[in-house]
Length: 383
Image (tube, rainbow, N blue to C red; front, side, top):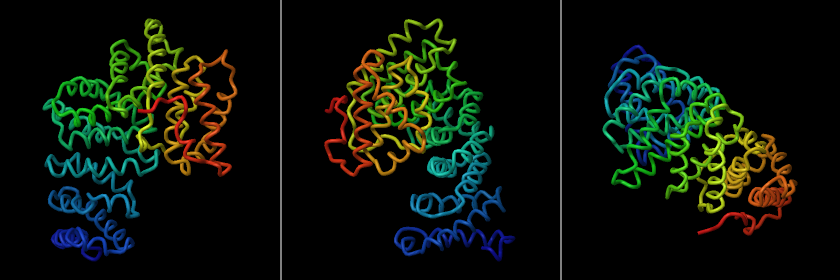
């Protein structure tokens, strides 16, 4: 492929051979370095012939496996850009499906700076929203709809620039329609999957202070409070996160006409979290804890502090080796210590107990004295 990059017929034949070589059992015997080299040549071929639909399809077929995208070390950012270019150029359903699957995976495996660069491209964001809108009109629950929402969710993660682009292209209105129009579909599993992706995406938007004014409306708050009662623990979790972020911004002028809603929402979030239970596996993965600092320091909203503590405790107890060091690295542990030392006059019992529980858990882990009894907080009811 390298020696015949100018011969498209050779590229076509080579990608067909690579596809067969990397499939199933034969692919497991290929050394990772050889796989990495193969991906390099595939990307070179994609860049050289961006308008050749069949060649692009061949390349996507090779790339679109978990083994290739997760286990092989290659330039994932370049790959994401090339496949997004492919998405913007072709309408073929198989190409759209493969590109969305690839992007939804790669977006979580590139840096936040790279994600911002990718998602700030208005052409890319427009195309993703266009696909989502088309599927919404059909009330489709197929993999394309799910992959499109996953891609949007991952691309906006910790990326204010991407979130801004999303909102400028009327993304909030679109995904709110998704919440409403999939509410009464017969496929309960698909409903939960789609709605969870939507609230996860909206949680990313709610983390951006400059964009919260768009969300602090009676209709949006009521929708999130209703979502807080979902049967899905993941949907409840992200809905709580959205409300926690909005409540932490108590001085936002958008709250001026919603004073009663602010108070009732604060109370409702605290009550909801006090009845949450911890699933056996983590519901979410975080790259860093920095977005939690404003919530933990939000002394005007105990609900914000409570949700942030629950979230941090949840992932730390599931994977302390990964997340406990992150607490110190990102400056979150200081916030936890400060909250654990408050008096009951300045906090609420749920926040105090969970902060102290988390503080003890971290101390036990660091001292090597962690045991199974530390893995569930006393403030959370189990089912």
